[in-house]
Amino acid sequence: MEKKITVIKGDGIGPEIVTEAQKVLDKVAEKFGHKFVYTDILMGGCSIDKYGVPLTDEAVEIAKNSDAVLLGSIGGNTSTSPWYKLAPNLRPEAGLLKIRKELGLFANLRPANLYPELREACPLKDDIIGDGFDMMIMRELTGGLYFGARKTENVDGVETAVDTLTYNENEIRRIAIRGFDIAMKRRKKVTSVDKANVLDSSRLWRKVVNEVAKDYPEVELEHMLVDNCAMQLVRDPKQFDVILTENMFGDILSDEAAMISGSLGMLASASLNDTKFGMYEPSHGSAPDIAGQDKANPIATILSASMLLRFSFDMDKEADAIDNAVKKVLEAGYRTGDIMSEDMKLVGCKEMGSLVADMI
Ligand code: NAD
Ligand code: IPM
Ligand code: MN
Image (cartoon, rainbow, N blue to C red; front, side, top):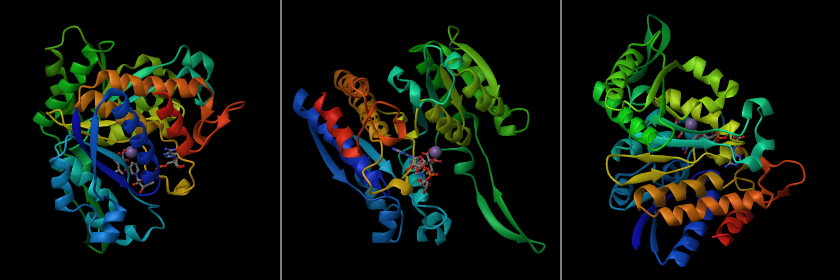
């Protein structure tokens, strides 16, 4: 099968980790008789440096005309990089928000589970971990605080900043339906996370999720306040199957879930719309502190490439081959620095990518 993949390497460790994911995809293509045709586009700081904007309309068109997008990460050090002296709509992150919105990628799936081999990298105690956990964070991705009106102004001599958090019932319904559909294929439990004790948007969220739940009588639904959820993730992560939540809460909770999986460098993600199209990216950022040093863990990006094959191309066997290869490499004791523990073999980003590709 021939497929067109738009590739966004981005900034920081982005080019390093995407190169390794492409190495793995190329091995899949060779083994299974496919052809993946890549087209690179710029997004983030590298696009600002070349075009003065974090994402051009031409780049969006290229992405729209492909079968899927593979993204590394964008952005720089937000305290020191000159990109953060620009107007907010010209900064690297604005490119990422623009592509999510333009492609209608409202459903962000972030699977978090603990590989037994990474037990030592997980900061939780044995009695909490038991025989591991396996959850899917379903994060709404094109609404809420990220896309509401914002301004900074002087009010009676006092500098004042405003961000607005808006959701309508349709935006909530479509992500809730996705969450319940996914729960039906898993352990049939949805934990909807909100702040309904304070926010109107959360009260609407809860109401609509309750309505959607009526169509899924087999799925157990519970509501949890976000502060409690942050605590429960480290107290008893096994209790979660699907966590269904809005944009900002999902951003924060998924970094927490990544860390109990061993490292941010392990957490893959898929951003989907109503079609087979999707954008696939690790949940972590551009890690400017380790960029260009061959230290980054490419596994989150490699597993995102696996999600790309599974969700956008219906290539289940090929995706399984990638997932199994990652497991085998971990079983064989190879680790990047972020998941390193005693007696394991420390490897760099490139070697980790080659090891996974060789196992396919
Ligand atoms: P970050 O995720 O880049 O890094 C946080 C910490 O985790 C750092 O110590 C980093 O070294 C480590 N880390 C992250 N990914 C790793 C990997 N694959 N292997 C090993 N270690 C890894 O978060 P940050 O430092 O808060 O943000 C840096 C920049 O990334 C910011 O500009 C931010 O806006 C951007 N960002 C981009 C995305 C994205 O492109 N999707 C996501 C998150 C943050
Ligand atoms: C993520 C990132 C982005 C987000 C930033 C870079 C805009 O943190 O993908 O998790 O908050 O969505
Ligand atoms: Mn994030």
